[in-house]
Length: 312
Image 1 (tube, rainbow, N blue to C red):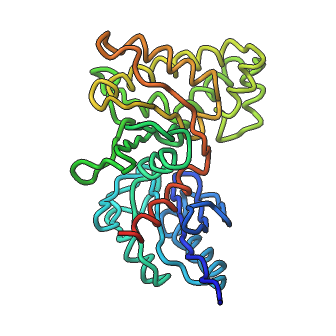
Image 2: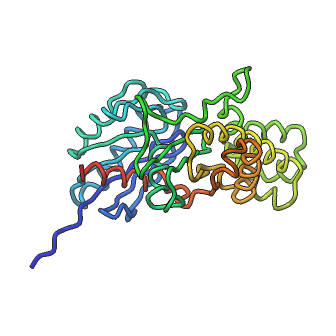
């Protein structure tokens, strides 16, 4: 008897710096991937061209049942229409789900990238056995996602947990202004002008445009600039996440995105600060973990999203 072919699902991550397109089956395991750099100057139209070219490369391998998308910005998840992108021009009010349906002939479900990453970590990553789970992504921007009973919690539309837009003070300093990858890159570039011979600045010269990648190796060299940046990042994130704890009471907080590549020093700094700001009745507060899926959190979550949509 002929075995039934496995269903194919597509997962897409559309971010401010990268585009990922992955293929998976009912298990939501990634079997094939394409990873491309995003060029902000080309705008949304440039990203759509990249998606179209990638689809033309993948479509001959067989039909796709559902496409799940994690988009880096506010999304009307009911319709798949983009509200806006904070990094890339040309996405405002764009019907992404409709465009992808016309391109591929597949069903499409779209959600915010941090929501999708939270779903991926809850189902296949660091969040196994925890409920609720809060995920914070520290990338070009800062986003968040809340998963309750293994499903994304949206609230009213557009339905993102925009932790990056929490205020750290009454002067409108946002979490994103202090804790995003781009914010840390900018602060390191200022240090490179003031103290170019320090270990952090010397290492950062090897990561033009992504200077924050030098923090982890600089910490290993006990660089004082790196230690101060880590301390400030841990303080700001721990304080911001204390508000999440007091309102949503997650069982686990997961740190993801590029800055989470700092690793255990960042996790410890955030967890230590968070404990100080959580009120006594809720002590010791949730566990804090690093994302287990790393850069696969959004595409893996997009495959889960597609599979769930197919099963509805």
